[in-house]
Length: 550
Ligand code: GLU
Image 1 (cartoon, protein in one colour):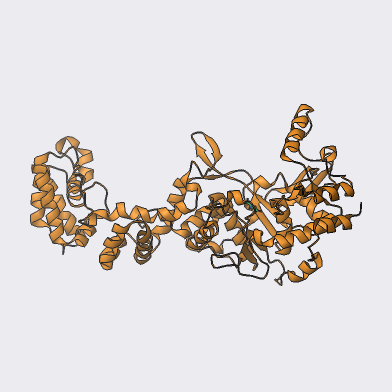
Image 2: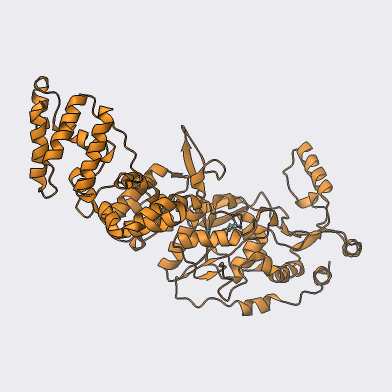
């Protein structure tokens, strides 16, 4: 068969050649060892946490080596695409503080290796497809859906492997005259790869995460161009990663199955393959079993969840690093105060089996990270979050910045800072009682304090409270009230002789806490009272008295 003739028949208008493209997209001028990675999502309207795992890997590999990390939009499947899909992706990453060096962005494309959206690259795919045809490695297939379904049914009947290959491949050896005739009739066709593989032979391919893989060769004549001329993922991957000069392809393990096809395509056209790393899926414990995090069932699968909840971006990244690199936690313990970017990320330490995502662990890490921030940063971040997600909180926080910052300063800065919140949406529940508008007291006094004792505590305290007292004097007054009412002034004393007392000083403090904050958990009471001010503290005590006496 004259493949050049076939190529011209199929692509009469394609003048662009491989040589032109090689010249247009030269090798990148980067230092030795610099890695070029890409994130290449389909614009389906959201970014899955599993993709984020890959993105962080890509970003670290590129930036740790002085390389380039770019964004390519894989929009060849119009069915999966949603309006604004690209802006959602770009906004999500902007919020996560992930910056691409080049590629697609909401403002258009940046970089000389574009266009970075596959639908705008059709001319390039067709030029390469034409070359595959010339090499005898691609051919048109005119099979209808019905014919393919029928082929499948026969394969099932004969217990043959499924797929379009070998003698099942109806148009693989179709005479040129027939092709010409069918084209003339305007019959739709797809362009298929002509595989030379054989299932009984093996391919070896190194994987950055999994070591050397050894699998049967591909023997399927996969579709390269669909009937509308748009490429499949497989063909676009080969073309794009070649001409965008990607050195390292990090992608999900779902692509392992077609890796032999990708290897064969690269070989067919004589291009060097990128290095591959196939990441494990992100899993979740559901009862006793592990399952994939699913967009439908798990809100935390969608990266927008983290913005909505107000997670602090460095904490998210910190957590993802623990998932991605098994030795990150060890490094973190040894280097508690360094930015995570100083950790030497090693792709070989990425897990092979499903990474277990655990929101509780993210929260713990987050609380830790946030506990080290200054009150000003916590304030600014909460305000920025509340501006979008909690209007009332935003109004209250911005009404008096100093007041809010003093609340957020409680227990911050020491050797053992308080770990009250994992995300900005936790802030409201932590400080709501400081705002009269939000104050909704639950007068749950300790069970061993009789109502008349609670009243006595509050009445007595009103007479002695002095905001100027230093800590021991302040607490001394509470101890004195405890003693007067038959409660032990020290917990120790109570423990020794519980029968001698009605309870201990902790119960008395609790009465005050519940009266002033309206709950049993709050930060340091003396601080709370001093921030509220004497007048409001006493007014709250009065309100509690009223509630008890009702
Ligand atoms: N568009 C593909 C996906 O969303 C990208 C896979 C790859 O990174 O090559 O799964």
